[in-house]
Length: 341
View 1 (tube, rainbow, N blue to C red):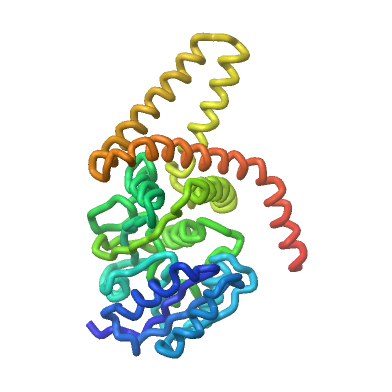
View 2: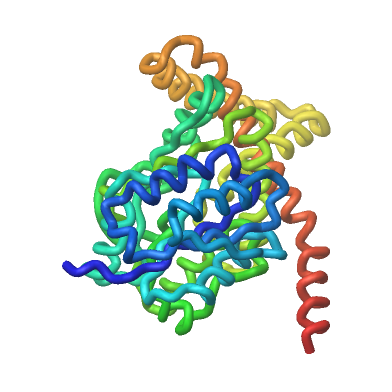
């Protein structure tokens, strides 16, 4: 099929560690370079990200650099979409690398399948020993629940895909990215696509090599923020988040509740329920840590055993923080709306 001219959009901020490899992977694609513009929307980076992009423009005049004073991803995407010259838009992330067929397969899938958004599968990678351990955790059902785009080996219609490929007219029809969403903007957009009668198609041959956080602090911060914004997103847009996003909240809340009930009542019932819950969790923790260690090496075992509960508790406490922050967040949103009138 004839390949159309496309706009590739990447929100970026402080990506000097990854930007060179990302640009190399974009211009190593088997998609014709003369048939794409590559729009980097920078959220006021404080490192050399913009300077590096300016240098790379000399070799790749297809690169466009735009400013995002609001800094967050949904603002960046909307800025890029408004500036896009093409009818087909491919969203990428600078924190990732892309096999040579990524863009071509994304565009072909969008244009040949009955869908409004086409995407693929995350292949999580890590840098260094801790990064590799975190990546292995995020490849398991215990780490990510039933996240299809991380675990599937099949094609088909799904609820969401990472990044995405769309026709520009979709945003003219249903609106752009929700700028209230510091996180989960992809989930919200895909929920709106489905609600409007659209379809999202996952082609498992489309692979994204995504570099996860490579420190314990980094993955716990990610879990905390994901948990917090999962609650906020679900409140603002009911139905946009899946059940799996709230399992850590249930786990943390039930643990706290059972501990308090056991201390207050000194009942064996609540102590027994707590022991059953944690016994089941630790069995899963040890099982998945063992499967990773058996393949990757036994030095991974103690790290994985700690990583799972650290990530899940950070996620769960983030959800609790999201619940506590809701009144203030919703009040701020009302004040914004009133200020625009």
